[in-house]
Length: 502
Ligand code: CA
Image (cartoon, rainbow, N blue to C red):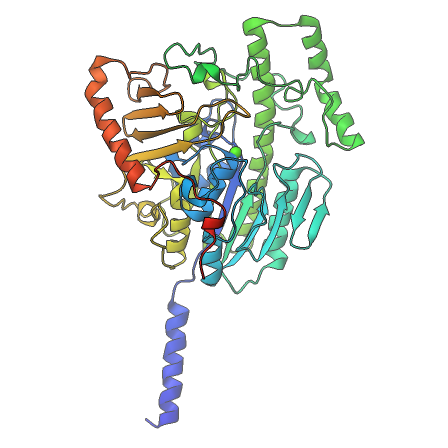
C-alpha cells in the first residue's frame, strides 16, 4: 500500500473505532431540599403520590439505605461536591462559607470534557465554581418571585420558584448548552423546605382529607437521653404562625397574596373559633404543616415530570443518568418533629433513585449502605474519569450493575455540628451498621444505642441495657476505626487551608 493510501486507511479505521465507542452519559442530578422518603410513593408513602419521581424507581434503582454525612442543607451540598466529610471540606454548618478554590466534582467533570450547569438552590454562600453556566437562589431563596444570582448579576423572576428553576433547566437543555458535549446538570429545588408555601394550583389539595399521623407523633422522649428532650423543632411548640399560615405571608405579589389568603381563610377562622389546645393543637398543627409540605412536593413532582418528558421527547433519556435525591431526610411528625439534623433514621436517610438505561435493571431495589459521599465518585466513574485518592466515598457504578463488591462498607459514619441555633440539636457523631446505631452526643457526653431490628422507630435506647454491653463495646471500637479512616480527629479545615497549592 502506498504511504498516502495507508494513512487514509488508518484514518478511516480510527474514526470507525471512535464512532463505536460508547458515548459518555449525561448526568442529570435532581435534588430537592428536605424531601423525606416518607413522602415519595415509590418508598411506600402513606401520605401522598409522586408518580413522576416514581418513574425513576420503576425504570431504575431505588436505594433503601442511602445516608448523609451530616443532615443539613449546606454541609450535605458540600459533601456532594467534594466527596469528603465536612471537617475536610470546611463546611460543617450553614454558618460557614464554601471555599470554591478546592477540588470539586464539577471542576473535574468540566476538565474532563463535560459541560456543567448549576440551577436552583446552591446554599454555599460563595459563588459556584466549576460550572459553565449557573443561576442560583440567594441563600435559602423564596417560594415566590425569586431573584436569582448569575455570573452577570441578579435577575428577578415572577412566579413560583419550583416552576421557574425547571423553566431554566429546560431552557439550558434545549437552547444554551453545546449539544456536542456530555453534560452534568445539577437541577436543585428549594422546595419542600420550610416555610412550605404551595403553588396556587395546589392550595386546595388535601383540603378534605386527614393525613395519617406517624405512630410516634406524641413521643415523650423517655426512652433516650436529654438531647431529644431539649429539641426546638416540635410540631407542638416550634412551628410559627408564619409556618402555619396564620399570618400574612411575605414575598408574594398582590394577586398571589389574594389567592393565598382566600385558600386559608375559612380554616383559619374555624381555628380561631375552636382554639384547640394540647393534643388537639398538635394534631391541627400537624395537618396544616404536612398538607402544605405535600403541596410543595406535588409541585416538585410535576416539574420532575416536565424534565423527564423533555428527555423522552428529545432522544436524551437513553444516554442520561437521572438521579432524584434530597439533600437529607426529614421528619413528617415522627418523634413529634419537623426539620432534620439528628442521626435518627428519618433525617439520616435520604431518598436516592437512579435511572441509567442499559446499566441498571429496571425496578431494582438496593439495600447496601450507600452515602451522599459516594455521588461524585459515581459521576466520575460513569464519565470514564479517574477518581482522586482524597475523595472519601466510593463509586456506586458496580452496585448499579448489581455487582456490589464483597468489601463494600458494613457501617456508616455520621457527624453533625450546628448548635445551638436554630433547633438546639446537640452535636453528635455515630455509627450505623446493618442492625444497630450508636450515637455519641459528645458535648454533653451522652450515648444512645438503638436495636434497629427490634425497634425500627428508635424509641428506646439500649445503651445502659446489660444485654447490649458487648454490642456497645464492639460498636465503640468500630466507631473509633471509622473516625480514623475518615480522618475526623475533631479539627475542621479552615477556608484558607482548603485552597489548592500551585
Ligand atoms: Ca435541606
